[in-house]
Length: 220
Length: 299
Image (cartoon, rainbow over the protein chains, first blue to last red):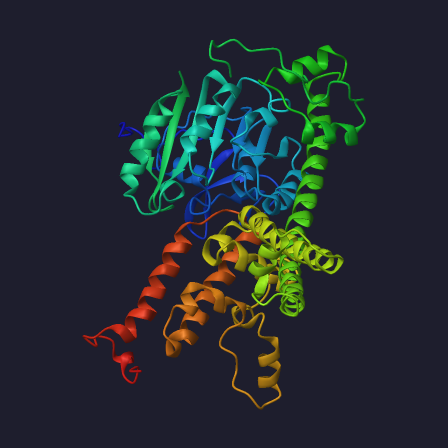
């Protein structure tokens, strides 16, 4: 996998608005905003647990995600909004796409406390159903969809991404095929992804998330 | 995205086009129902068209409309789907039961007229094809036709349930099979009530009569309700069925909760259930007797 040797687990450049702070004596990621899911808070900072968030795990794994803060973000697979709440804390306008109605209920609650978060009950596999809402040239697509064909989703949503934007995806091996070796699944997914992207960096997200591959890519 | 890389004109334009700036209701409807072939710089267009004074105002309007759209859409879909399933599965059972009852009537009537009269829905189907030779035949054959139609309707309802259940409860449908999953949702009165039931209750859903007999104190506790129709219970040797039913109910309860609270498909559940079932069935069949619990299992 691509080298990440000069950025150790604590050497990643964190975006503006994300800090390492001590919670229970351990240095952990934190963003500033309204608490959402009972996470520990400290002086207005909310602990961002890498075990619950694949994007946080990508930060913790020392990946160079290329976020500086205040970006326009399209988040695919927002679920109940745990991760997207942290993203909205440090990013600019944040479009959160989620298809299952139950988690969207929670996502709406998260969005009510945030001025820059727009929840969309849409299917990430059908970008034409939200292209009339999500603006073009977003700075980053964060993808965490648990569906078969995750690479396909990324390729189809590339149209939203600015030419110098970044795709930050967490690929879940078990969503593609539970039985196959995750490494083989990832290899196939990356091959599909290269149809639309140049893959800059990959890293397994263990120990935070089993059988997940973090991917940083840019459109080509 | 088009093949040649150009962006076509979007068909409906941005969600805000034709919407008054303070009309969040109309905006929400456009967000829910609209579409476009490609994105555009919507904030800029909204400001240029006078929908908003600046980006900030645009985003505030978008926020209002998107919150409303998501809230309404989620409530509507959640409310709609599992209740539709409940109706469908009850209608399927009613249609099948009525078809059987009418088939009995048809068979009895036909037996008085034709020496070769058969029984069941299949015979009603056969009879429905005949040409009536008398006014009495006419009535009988028409009744047979209705019976066949009812049976067909029940079959179509089953197909509908098989298509629809995986949308409403993907994990439960995968583990239980779509029809059994729909039955469980129906017996509980919806996906939410099912998700809130303990596994022991799910295990005996559909066996209420035996359960109450047991609670009154003069019967053994039922081992299974409708989940008996699942291959993992029915296909397991009788003395292991209790364990099989308990294990299956446990996994189905987890599946229902994931479906209700997260909606995300977890394929690993299928594998876990399979593994546990192999263990349970393996225990008694294991001739090598490696498992100390296998004692006393012989038929």
